[in-house]
Length: 237
Image 1 (cartoon, rainbow, N blue to C red):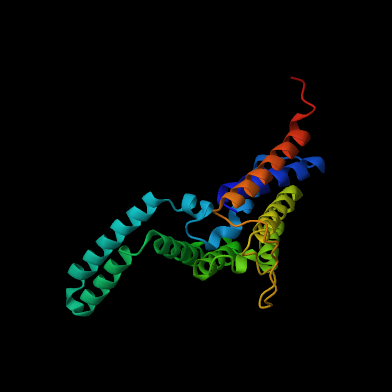
Image 2 (cartoon, helix red, strand yellow):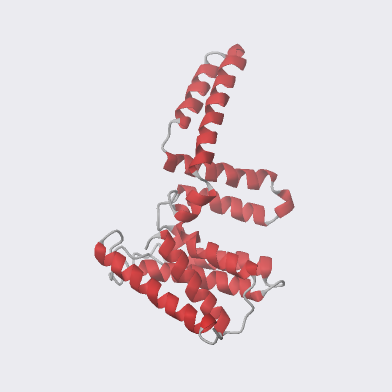
């Protein structure tokens, strides 16, 4: 499914279930639910979550910074010639990489920055930093689309929020799970327990086709009905 469909369906269903279970739906609960609905696609540089977190304008600024860094290395490192020229060319070549690849580079740099400088966030700086680096190097629907990715995310949420509000880690885990289940209905499916080759695949739709669009719109419609039944049916209009 597309990113917007994941956001609407996973968030809508999760908040409806949380509401039916009489948990308080606070802003942190809603925010974590929405992020978790998109999080499995963090290994896809052009996904809705990554493209919004690292927009094209930021990539353009990153390219300008790389060109400036390359020029600085060339002019200020002349005492180390010809290595300054080689390093400047290497930095310059990185600036010409496609946007998709540069987003991966930025994710790796952010992850490395968290590991090296995020001491105030310990131990989460190591965990999140490593997660960003690994996700930038993984193929789409890899580790993040597995039971292992779900468990890691739920553990992160549990140990960081359970004393504050248990609904946060519950809603985050459920929203993440719903994303995986949604991807399992596509013709590609997911491999939930690698290295085992078994795929969870119901083959009900193919993303990008008219049939796939109809299935997505159908699930969005059912989600809207569920949200209305849980939150709006008893309102006095």
